[in-house]
Image (cartoon, rainbow over all chains, first blue to last red; front, side, top):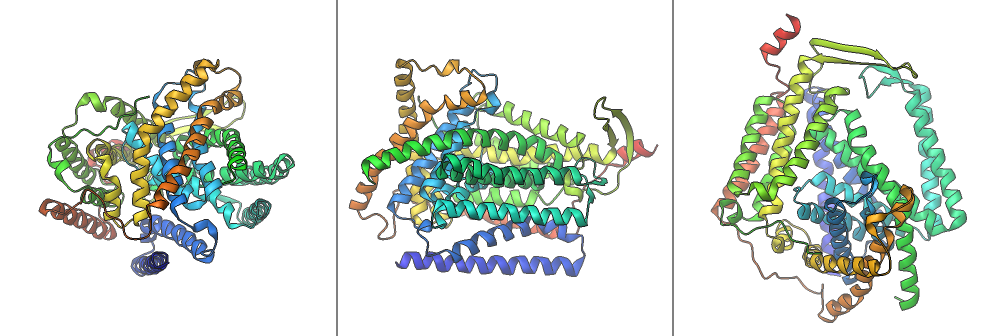
Length: 301
Length: 292
């Protein structure tokens, strides 16, 4: 279809522009003085992130996962509306519960919509849904958080790129295993880095162990959940990955935008957001998925 | 549940501007402001934000809750950054001049030492950070109250978003009141069956699980209803050709001026930042306090 080709060509053009831009910036800062690299680092990091996404997209362009037809348009609109409305409701209506902070049930919407309908639907649900929710609550528009919520929906959608759910789980497990190995090697070679809390050089081993143990938990968790059901394992693992990447993106972006210290970003933003989100998603997304699968079995669509 | 948009139609300069121009200006100033830490420059940006807010003529009553919440978050984050580590990603300032040192305190069981070095740089950085966050927030805050929700789709299409996505935005906005109503109906129906959202019992996991009777029916109903909508759109040949919108956005002179101003601010900021101007400024008085 011509529109599809045109969009794809436009994407390639923008990709080239982005790469050229990043190269120019790096050259400029290297030629002037090394200090400037820090100034353009956020743009560089974002650009690299975008390039990675584009490359994934171009590499798998033929996959059904990227199709945007009438069905996807309606699903993304509904997903965004649901996420926005639920966010508004659960943000503003006081929930009479001691653990108020921990009730963020709306997070299951972008995760589920991404998982069930694809990465494009997932990204739109998260991003536009977040914009909608902020509009309704009256907070304003915060682009970094919109993109972050978009990622929360986008990542679970990547499951569709794989032949089946089991392969997607294998890929994820493999990725985590590789990251663990790389991390372990890095720590072994360079154990002393500036600590995030004090800015002084300290032994990194605590964080390294935390990360390694986390990775092992993920791998073990995958096999445990898979015993119960592949779908359960897939939506939980990919959903959690999406939440970590999304909220992580927002927290790091806020380090650049608002000048938070690393500790503030972790304690003040990442932990309080990612923790409850992951918990809520792991409980509610599978329920939503089960209900959806029951409906599709019944209607056959 | 009545879900109302915050937008109120007012005849102000701000609302007469093209929303595309306003979004471009907002993004340009956002990318400009994050390149500086100098308090004096922050104040200039704060003035721009406040001017824009004042021109919107919002009432205290409609924004009171948001102001309180937003101020709480900003203050909390600033204080947290002040207490922990170094803000500004380690390049706002490198040297520190100590005013006062608190601690170190030894925590009893773990034996960790915690202390606080109050330095001149940290103090002025906290102030600059506060100003910067307020400048960004005030600019962002104005938008929900002054942009007509029905214009959102055509605005983003004007900014380059493909037709289908712009239409999806309009569709999402259109669904909001419907879903609000569905939520009310579901809540009442579940209440009639003995479900009490006010009395969620059990541990946190059980409580979350007990929210499912609210979320799942609304979501599944929306998805099932989508099938009719998809059919209706397909029958009307959706997506076959380029799409038109009922409201057309045209740039007027004021909009062009606004966009030009935004571009100028961004360019000037980038050049200044590249030249090294605009880093953290520590007033001499504060430095005297540290060394004297």
